[in-house]
Image (cartoon, one colour):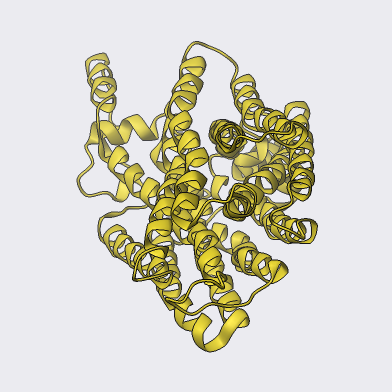
Length: 478
């Protein structure tokens, strides 16, 4: 904690603090690192969706080509989430008790190195070696969301949280936006599809080293943050370094039972599962849809596959601003979260139903509908995703690791089921079934969040004070 916070603060100082905190500060620089982490993290995840199109292109003579069928390709596309799921909860726990900044740095460094090794694994080990690489990449990148959430809870206050959270997590969409066209260009170049893995892997390693040097876990350990900015963050964030310790300076134990018996927590789990089904079905299968149904070559495929995510990235900024503006005007936090999430889930559900039900011949119209279906997902950044911090600032990272762990199982299942349904990539009827299923899951997940979701800090956010309160009641009765 800053010494400034322990001293009495007069009105003039408070005004100066507010004024200073409104400009660009250290917390904005740290948020830029989180944004780039999500950019690069998603590049590493999705670049294989474009690469695999060229890796299995039997007409190509430039580089190694693999005769993997639809089910084998779906297995590779889902393999990342096998490791990603296993390490979610351990990552959230490690980020809370050790260092979210260091964990994120090391995780992304190893993930980047494994991405560079993928072409070698494919050449000498085939399908199983590529799957092993993707599983290990998932293990390493499992820390991305828990660490980002942990850092957000320490570096932001509630009135800025939607903007900072949307900015950081919109890096995922921006990463997808740049990954698809860059992958398409690299895959179609003389360097071929292996260059896709080399480029993004090297990018991840450079970011990791930079963030390890210049990143920090919280305002209290940053050597150059002003006292005014530190006070602005700590006075209103609902958490701090010292809040994670009980009165005897031991680390707070996680209230596992309270978390897993919390109705709002289960609403988050279900809505997160719905998000992962729809979003990851689209993100992993769209290049195959573009090639099979719309007949785009690899360079066109990369550009067209990126457009929906460009739309989502652009929409994240007005949506996050409107979300914070509504909160500042006194709109209930729960209403803001649920309205944003309804836009994010029911909007795409309607778009996917239209895409499945209406016979459309124009590829431009199809891409436009897909852009709407994916783009409106931006509302989820200010909806269920930031809601973890609303419920418990102290355990937000752990909560995100729990919901993301369970939802990641869905991210594994969705591409596999898609591979079973779509027996022929050129048959639009098969793709319509996939779109209908995704629309229904989007609708049900958000309905549960609307009915059972909350936005108030839960009592188990501070189990130590709850125990003290119960003890004092017992003492008074005695």
